[in-house]
Amino acid sequence: MASNKIRVLVVLVLGIITSITGLLAWQNYEQTEVSDASFLDEEISSGESVESIPLVPVEEETFSQNAPVIINVSYSPESISLSGTVNSEPLADALLLASEQLIPDGDIFKDFEMLVGAEVAVVQLVISGEVIDEEERSRVLTKFLSLGVNVTDQLIIRGSNRTVFEVIRDTPELSQVYDFFEAAGVVEDLLPPGQSFTIFAPSNTAVEGLDIAALQEFAELVQLNEILQFHVVPGIFLYEDLGEGMTLDTVQGETLTIAQLEDGATTVSGGHILTNNIEGTDGIIHIIDTVLIPGTIQTEIELNQIVYFDPILFAVGSPYLADSSQPILEEIATILINNPEGNLEIQGHTDTDGGEDINLELSQARADTVRDFLISEGVEPERIVAVGYGETRLKVDPEETAEDRAANRRIEFRVN
Image 1 (cartoon, one colour):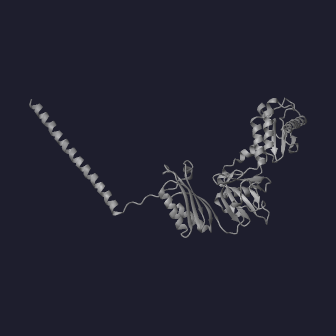
Image 2 (image 1 turned 60 degrees about the vertical axis):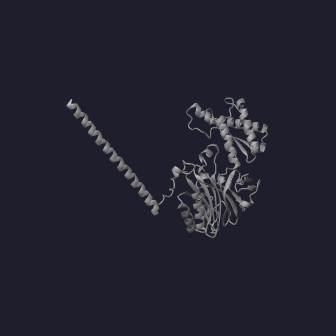
Image 3 (image 1 turned 60 degrees about the horizontal axis):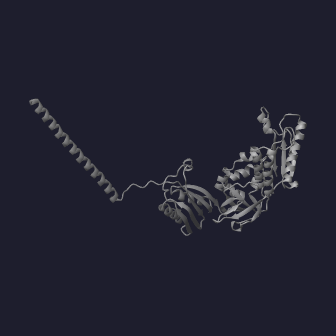
């Protein structure tokens, strides 16, 4: 009995000790919380808060995976025009302040659109226009980079004694097309001395998007200088001179067509003009967003893509056209009629089965059959020539399988 009373007394004492310990701990927690809050209040009231962390530009590989906020800055020593989207009012204010600091006595124009819900989006500034020299270029870029944004430099130097090719060379956004001009060996020889030219120069992004391998897959002997010459027009045509429906004869020999879109943009044969009226001593440069491909090359690619995926077939060992191939040639005739530029060479090819002379005659007869069919569909006879190459231009060499031989038995087209 006495032992039970002792046990109850011990439990009661332990309970009292636990309660007192918990109470003391809670009181200490409240005092700590009040102390922390007082420290924060004191820091704020003292005005000595920690400086805010500036925006950090995102690396390019990360940037490409995000939808950026694009802001266009058109700069000159006399005026700055700001347009595009912003994702915060403070950023818009910072851009205006930076612009005012760059040209205190100049004109500032802004046409921003607020992009709601994009507070963490990457901000990309595309700066175009003219600077006086490299020192001013550095000053402009540094001012905008200090805002913690990504910057694309499209500035060019004004008033220097440089040819259009030298301006292209010195313009960062045109470095790729200049490399192509240089690789084609036409930098010095393309423009005759004493003449002026207008060049529609593709941006780096446009050049990087061009699949040269795909062009060469379906167009024989694609000459890079021919494509480049298609971007050059004799004479000077300022941006304000380019009107709806105007056609311009290129150095390459084909024409470019100007169009005015409803949104006010101007295009040249489908390529949008991004930056205009960049001056050189011997001409004008307009930067466009597309590599322009001459119509003859486009037609050749289109025709050969058709027969690549759906070859023109003949009866075995004969020039007689298979019925299943007639709709293919009807489609080809329509393309040629709708694209009158250039003349067509129909090329007949065979595999290596049989004698070389027999294969040469067979390839010529099959090419003649295709020519006769296209003429019957309304293609002008003087535009078409048929040439048999026999087994002299094998697509697969050596032939080892039936598939190899089938690939070598083919009709192809060249437009020039």
